[in-house]
Amino acid sequence: MYNNRISLTGNLTKNPEYKNIQDRDLVHFRIAVNENVGSNKEETIYMDVDGWDSHARYAENVMLAKGDRVIVTG
Image 1 (cartoon, rainbow, N blue to C red):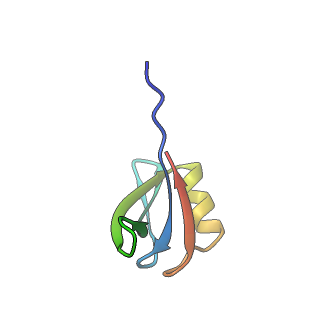
Image 2: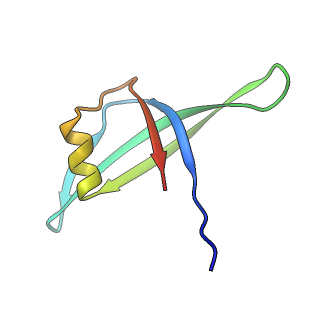
């Protein structure tokens, strides 16, 4: 069995959206991740992120907002 992990550091592109689906909390947001792809070139990648239950409640408690820098691991 493989244990693959990814860690992304980026900025929120807009305020997170909070929902409750079938008694489960959900937070949805998009981050912009800048990556160097050459000696003088930078590329921006946009990633959609969903966080469930305790992750959603944590995001709401710390009041994430557009432009905030976040680290996402999964």
